[in-house]
Length: 390
Image (cartoon, rainbow, N blue to C red):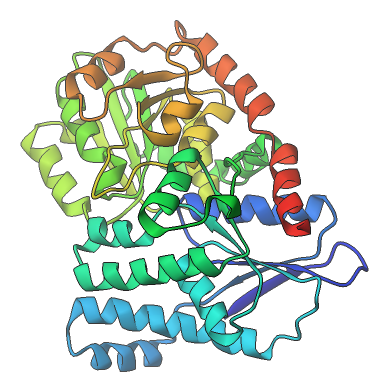
């Protein structure tokens, strides 16, 4: 179990930000931004997450699964929940402490130890649907779904990152509307540029090895169906312009995507970089001409407010995204970015052909101004602390 504490004042009480794990991806970026913002408003903060088991423990868990990969996933979840329960059971809780969870696994673990604990829970997306999409594991999906229903029922407040996620929680999981606050994601522009500087040296080394074209496009995407990288690759094959892709991220579709790149004859226009630290991802965005977010609906999972899109806009880049979920709520076509219909390969190919960094520079300027004005971290953390204060 990893617990990182920051003490900002002498008052009793802390905000415990609890998540299943830290790594690449939108939830990790969200949690890091939240911790930083809370410190800036003088809240005592603790970032808490279970850790990967030791090698010996992993061997024991692997033997317990008897070679069944689906069973192994559930055992890993139970092991991480065990870590959370053990930590929480020993915690000396103060009445003014706030427990803010970001996944159903850790939220459910807290309720297992102390059923009346008051939790604020952020809904980033339904875990049960993500599991179906990633692993096609019906049993684990149902297991997650039952937890989601209980967590949404028992949480003191629910924060949804956009209207779509709020509607799913209400309609599919029976969440009470009066419990839900819609607080959209944020990007701290000043912090983002500091992060980019931290990753610049390594990025410069990477850029020297990348396939570069007249127009370079970053896709900071976990390689799963809902993130639409497969659609983007099909569109790339239909472009006439000299466009290249830098694909940052990993996931279960990587092998299939690499194979498709070869089949389409665009291997010399695509670089798969795998998972990278956030600082390097942001720095790569600075080097690119376009940030592409080609999300599609998959297994009932719809893109919430994309952190990658917000980061690209905050960096003043041209963001091209599918007209779906939270993306459609934040991007105004040809005003602060570009939109196309999900799955419309020709529409996306046309945008990739016609977009020009110099010609469309005003889109990036408008995007940065929009993020600064409408997605302010100061306003965002103020709304979240209002929920805490309730």
